[in-house]
Length: 448
Image (cartoon, rainbow, N blue to C red; front, side, top):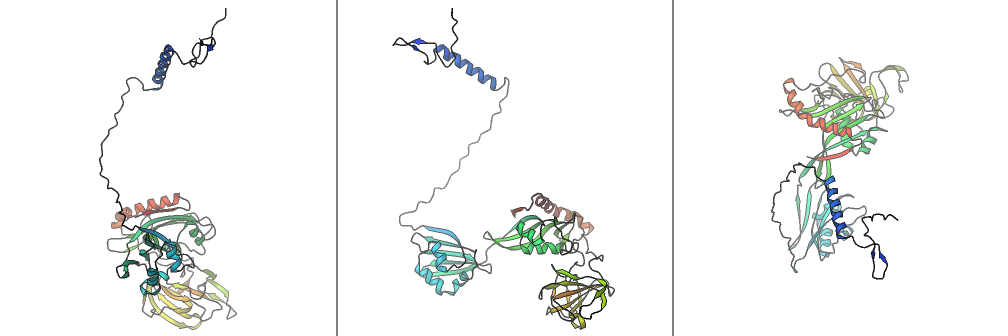
């Protein structure tokens, strides 16, 4: 006797049809529905909440808030639309306004003849101009930042147009950048999006410890935290460097800007030592040494072997020359083979000499006080010189010494009784430097 197979749950037992055949795919019977329900409940129990589990009630709170209804414009209103356009190369006032949807002969006449609109003609490509126009294409208002940093607003009035100048509010953002030198310092700065003014200031901060012409090499890394200025969202220049790190030949140099309660400021290391030496290593920001300090050099003009008691820095005529330390001018003018030359007396027995200058800063008279980094003259080839360069001497007790290898005096450190205040002030800047280091070629900006 054949054994019947139990039906699967998706089927019901075969039942006779009216035509005498068998119905093999009918709906489940009532008993099968009960069985399905029981299995479903048991499945839920298997994957549900365990017995004696306490369910934490999620607190709820009803919040009611009144929302303003949108303003509904009547049929008589004429909507005003603002849009931003940027000056393009080869633009005219007509093409600029046409892109903004302006079709206004009166406005065009104003811009053509009124001198108050002249700053608009002087804007450089890329500068934004905000234009308000109504549905008829009439100019309602126009505003932009002049090259001088003022905001100029031109608005339609009952009797034509009026122009108003104002000083926009400046926003200062703290910006973090880091980079790695692969070809040059400026190349790394460009890759990291750092303005030239910041990288020059960075080199100046570490000028007492690093010669940025001789010492910098491929693989050196740097991180910098600096102020970036914005006006109406547009870059408007840079401010101070707040913190910086330069890893040169595996040695990390760090510096933090700090101003004490008396208004004295400077750059200091983590432990409060002044990051600036009393003397800069070089009298120019970037240059090339063509002749070093030596006891025997063949003089190109005198055609004989002589001592060369200074360093010659090659640079184009007119390159600014800076004093390497605070001091007082003891001589300024023409002197034999030096040509135009400046002598500066510094603290203690130190003095420096700057020769072959094309010209000397006009205010630099004997007795004038100079500060480290001040421009005192410009590279030239006066006196005994075969090409434009600066002859620089570093003297101790009137005896020339090699400035690239001599131990230079350092500036005063943070006073002991102010060290706790200093540490607290630089802690967030140290955290910012750590963040910049962790982001290769980072470009992170934070609003302040």
